[in-house]
Image (cartoon, rainbow, N blue to C red; front, side, top):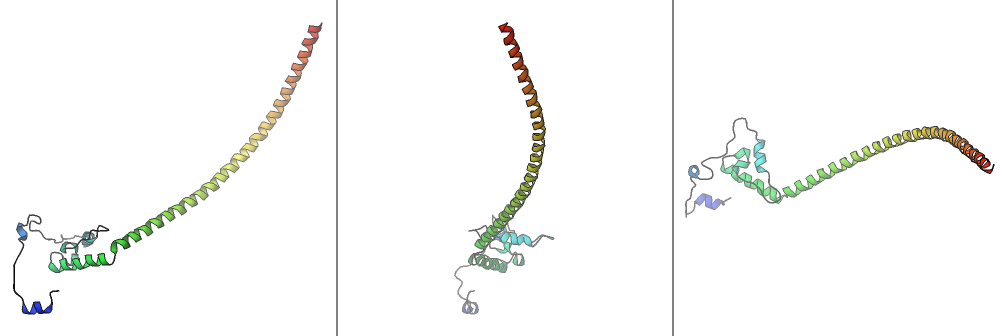
Amino acid sequence: MFGEEKVLTGGKIVKFQRSKWVSDEFSKGASTYPKVGSDPALWDTFAQPLCPYIYFAGEHTLFDGHGSLHGAYNSGIRAGDQIMTGLCEKQRKERLKVEEKKKKEANETDSAEEEDTDEEDEEISDKKRSKKDEGDKKRSKKDKSKDEGDKKKVQKDKNKIKKDKKKDEL
């Protein structure tokens, strides 16, 4: 990382700076450490990017390196790899595939339900038609008898009119 020469010969210290972790106003001296019984998958959650632009690195995002410099370094390598390999774009494409598959399945389900509904509608229509035909037959008989009754009534009315005319003539 620094080059072999610098490591072997040392080098001149220009400035020395160290953090006072315990008195830091944001961390209050805390570092990450798993609680007994905690799930290592929790660190995977911390490592997930907020696509498409925010990636996380730091010792707190890696279970096998929490609270250490190598954890911070390795998590930086991981975040860089996520960016370079297009992780967010891959996740977006996968999500779109899943959504399309769900839509397709929903459409197939709807089509199957429509076919079932069409069959049920046909059955209902057939039943309605047969009931209508029965009703038409009954109505037809009633209509015939009604027509005959109407004809008789009309004939009676005609006969009555004729009688009334004869009376008027006399």
